[in-house]
Length: 208
Image 1: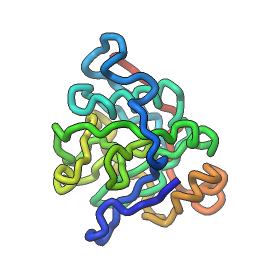
Image 2: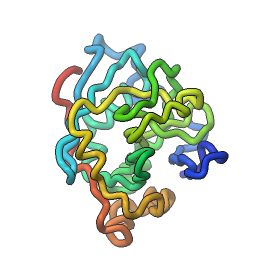
Image 3: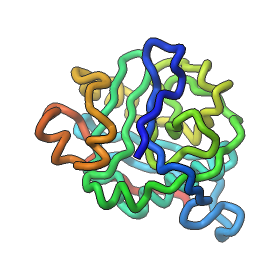
Image 4: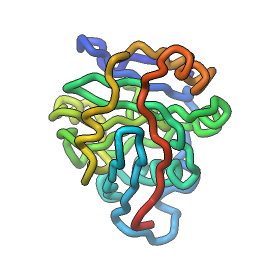
């Protein structure tokens, strides 16, 4: 697992974990899957309250499909919001158990950027290398439109619960080490960063 800076010229480097050069169009690529609704809704039951995300498959098909599969697999249940930078992003994406994180550490192809990283939009993190998205995601806490030109393609937006997102614990900022999270999972985070908020469960509430 690599922990790489996405834009080194920024004071707050944006980081994400990548599984190296192995690439996949996800468990089932959008091109080959059965006909699906163009949008679907996901409810995150977080320790700060419910957050509903509306995903638009036409914005970023590969990212939208990976998020769908992760939610259906209950990958995010118990996942900590391990990186919270007020005025920038709330990030999550490592599973509670290291073995689950490793299983899904498979990259998906990039999507063209069709939307903008405005406040409340939901986007996959990446390493800055082509086709490096895996499971790590973020919600924009502000209009981070500079990310658009860097290839960050939003998959949807928070339709309700943004107030809960804005109150997710930010006291640890960027302290948790992503390599340690990948290796030890929640055991590492619960021991060293006990105040982190987390996703109790994530589920598809409409669409397919």
